[in-house]
Length: 253
Image 1 (spheres, one colour):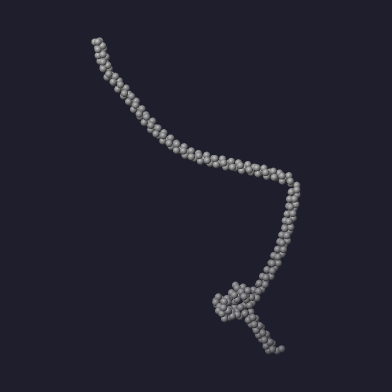
Image 2 (cartoon, helix red, strand yellow):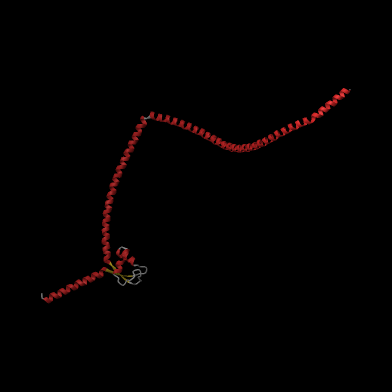
């Protein structure tokens, strides 16, 4: 093959590669027309699997200045390769989720087995307790009789305690009545003490007045004695003259 033939062949190969790349690029973008009520977030959710990937759509639509303002009839390009990437990630998460589910199912099965063992042990314990109860029921008649006697004694004691409680309550009521009477008597005693103090004050005043009167009476008695002495002195000459006259008359007779 000549040099010119090799050059033509190379050009054709490169042309085929460019055509393939251009076709691949065009195939990676899906063009849709906007309908009434559509949003970029809606397209991202439908074609890319996640509404939060709307910036990926804006990146391949340089004329889309405001992603929140699109109009019916407007053409929007969707980067399908992003959906492929999201699909791969979701498939990976699905595999991980299935593995986790298998692990959890294994744990659940193990827990169920353990629960079954515990339930069986519980039933065995219950059967053992029932058997023990049967043995106790058969061998403990005396204990039951003793328990019955103790229960009767306990009832008697409770009745006695109730009776004593009634008496105690009666005594408490009497105590409260006595306390009320004491309070009343204390009030009356305070009143009487006030009256006694008033009477003592009046008696002291009377005693002072009596002392004054007794003093005055003593002075009056002294004055009366003096007056009697003076009257006796004044009557003496009259008595002498009367005696002489009387004697004269008798002699004259």
